[in-house]
Length: 351
Image 1 (tube, one colour):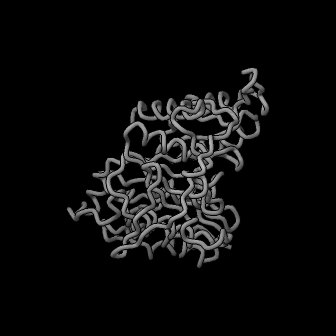
Image 2 (cartoon, helix red, strand yellow; image 1 turned 180 degrees about the vertical axis):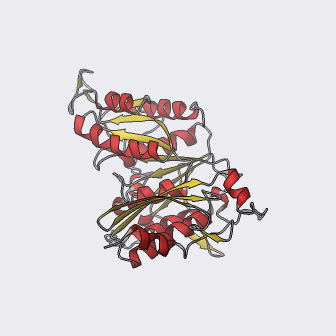
Image 3 (cartoon, helix red, strand yellow; image 1 turned 90 degrees about the vertical axis):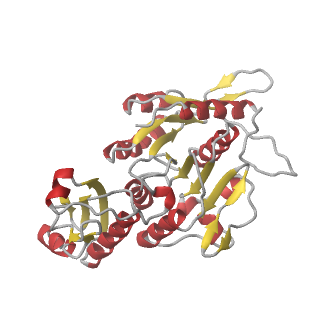
């Protein structure tokens, strides 16, 4: 069984690239938590949100799994300026990571997540992306729901990304740049990769894709708080979060876990979208609350945020010549609701 001493010894092999010293030498191993062979760590680096952090994350996971860990959970924070100065200070080396993750990047990273599957998280992601584009913003979307990728089908995308000079150029649809795991598997094959391989793929979505200038990059996360969500939380320390739930109490309860993880990793929660809020009859206009009421409001109260919108059950109008089975038009009643949600997102102060 792993011990704390064995973990510290193993981590002497991991260097903080900015200080050229091991993370044990810098005092960067802040917290160690053991539950059997499940390890949780907090690591402080001179800089976070860089490609070096991504490499260190993967290195730590690989080393500790090689030592016998079943799972490795990581949270990153930064060394204080006093600690960095005492260790010799930082050089002035230019940022070498993906441009979209550089300190100069103005892109807002917006994670759309949920506690459980089946609540319409991906539907909210694609329609929010399109609504933001209609409001004049430059938008990209990463379909990071590795096991349940559906964004290309939802948006009616049939082509694949183009590779030129070892750079991947995302597919563009409705003015939104799109990248998805679905572009890299054949015939809807199941993805059976383990955590490290998935982490590498997510890393490639940032480092090898030519995003250009974006105002917003929306990330459709897998439901829950698994490896992919944790990877993204550590790769992008300044991500903003939108929680998707249904009105049902159970969906809201499990969504609160994802919200709590966002808070613990110092991410900013933009708000809650309550999907499948009600069914409105076209003939009478009466509303039926099929899944109950109040789930979104209770979740927003618990997370001390707001409900950005209540999305009813519905179906976009299908255009056979421009097929996109999940995208609502700008004049559709539900499309109008998504526009209002997008406006609220644009008005959110960025901390």
